[in-house]
Image (tube, rainbow, N blue to C red):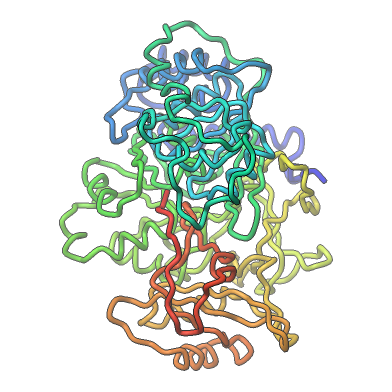
Length: 591
């Protein structure tokens, strides 16, 4: 099944609407001003030639504002002209052949990844963005299915790639530096991620010095040359986060146009002269979208290889007008800093904190806005649907759990199991459509589409004020003794207990009731709580049938590299303790 565009703006009406949206975008964001008319014409000419691909956005920005900062990372600053030139050199030097080669990218947030994305966009290569939190099994599965002809990776991932069959990693370039020659690709990796013992010569260790050069070496050795836009446009394959199973590849449109930016900025006041700190990982839909929007606005992008909450505050204090793109758990880490540490940094330059990637837990929105001002915007969406709704500070003040309202040119509906629209405050399946729906799964998996609207896979409801609330995954509904339970309701209740810092509630098999709830709780430092108090609170605040029978107190929740809680890691551990026991999971860093 394939998706269809929403039918509310067909033909002439849609074109008129696009012209109106474009004019509003140019005026609202300040894109129309600065640089003079000649540079504006050069920008428009370049954009017409290259289109709104990632390479086209940077090339057109370089035509209009060549000396303006484009990228700032741990290595320093690149202007738009420097970024465009280095991307052109890298594109010419990449060992790619054929009409649409496929490149796997396994990198953290730094210039090497940005240059790789730009170079692939210039060459018309299909890019597979690999999650830096994947273990060996997931990497092998994704590479085995998608078969990239070239891998570009950070040197730190050489040990991980050592456990991938040689046939899947014959061509490797290094995005930051070559791995030390003394450290072979077969260096030890954590036991939890090791594959079965090697019995095939295809898994023989390969020394690091047999890999390819670094992309910096390619850039230095490749002379500048004029390049034409590729005949076949580059596509990007995003991978689902894999929190509930095997990741699936979702193809993104190659030239999204400026309409997605017009939609998002109708609810988030992004401006051309803001500095965009992108802490969300670039391999994730939200981080990648932030990069696209920033460069479409000719705004400088600040990247950090690893997220550090104090470093984020230090960066905010270093610039004049700042937007931060992050995932919710990152703001939680900022709030966890000691008050005296936060007080060291002047964050009055923060204009927008834009969150995406996962739901806002508990009262995180209220606590953040109390500390940093009403500058928080939360976008709800998915890899497949892009954005669905955006919550503004005013809406988050009304209710910190809301996902807000759909922006311009976005359709939203709550449907029952038969596909009928339900009334206000009635829970159902969330369906949406916008200007940037994905083009389908690489594996050919079916998509659920009703009346031109794509299923997000989530349950939710719209309240009497027209605000959307996401109640949990559609496949996460728990049926216990005939009662339907949404774990998110129990999580929200438990997060109101002052002793609890974080919580995850999920379903486990039960021989008598079919399923039962298990709660995994992280306490605040110095707090004390027992399982009976937890159960009594849920009984009083939610329902008797929603009381978790299993209560685990753990040091931290297992999260993937985008900060999402991986529930299958909670329930699949063979060494899981008895209730109220403590266990530590291997915790990947945020990015």
